Length: 300
Image (cartoon, rainbow, N blue to C red; front, side):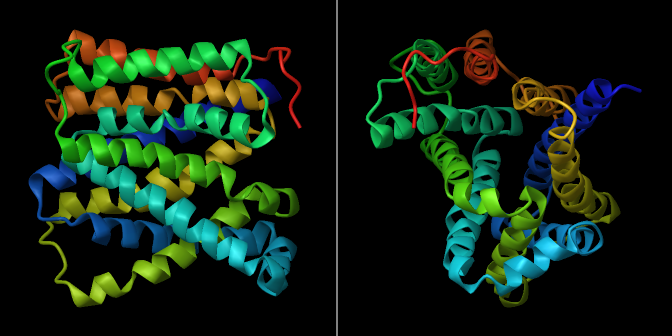
């Protein structure tokens, strides 16, 4: 098997497991009394712990460096709170108030927010391809939210608010650790941040009564933690070793694709033509951004 093929398989597997996680959580929210804060605390605590255990075996020196880097700890905590915990909570609330496909697609607006932020910070006009992406994202969001009718909303105000905030949180998740990622391995850094977020949310596990779950429900919770978080992230990060970021960016579209297929076929989620069109336009912005181009405006 060639390195390119291996990288493609790893990226598709990771993105698909993420998509499956969204569908699993949608089922749990619909059929159980599961609370968002509880599943996020469980997910972050145990997935973070698993990534840390993996780091001890694969990246022990990196983990030791992080633990002794007292200067960077405030950045790590900031990333854990505003980046990791924020994105996890907002995404799961978006799933709760809408569905997995819609929540996943709305989170895909984050690259557009990053483009706008970088243009402001660097005082550089966005590239032509960036402007095209922004236009597609705006049109896609219009169709997804209104169904093509400006006088109606396809989503509740709660779903729209949490979905848009999940995009902001995902942008923070990308922007906040930029300096940290230059010093440390991504999987180690995210394992530490995820575990910190899990510890911060862990009091919820003891203060509130746990959900009433059957065996299938617990298996889905285990899937969300093990396969939909720890393994998915590990596979996707490992794929970057074999293929370019542009390829992984394109293959990340398997996340909303899998979430949509599972939600429609197994959970009975219905998508109209307008919402499907809007979703495709938003996902297309990520695909466009993944295409290598010569920048029209010099960036710092």
